[in-house]
Image (cartoon, rainbow, N blue to C red):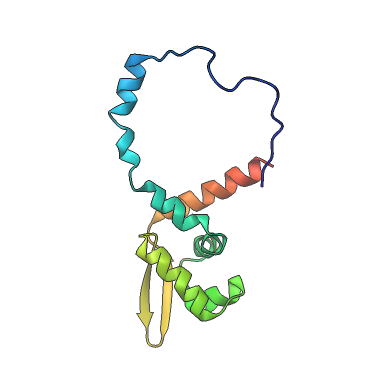
Length: 123
């Protein structure tokens, strides 16, 4: 957890005012973010984030490999991988008795990598 020192500075405006042109411009686009919270919800779980990160390091991983990497049962790994797939962040393919997962696209790779960079730079 990142803690920052908060100085005794008021964090609210001391008077009520707003810039109508800015407010209007932003209000016209604010609903574009509807649904994006689901992406963050999917990655907010520490185990799922580890799974997603592992999938940024390899093009694809077998469910058994993911279980071994995160130190869980295959059932638990499968559950988290299925969740990522259902949320539109991962895809899978079956090869015989094995199931391989990968991240859906480069955007998901970038989101995970950028979050990691942000976290390490903020230390």
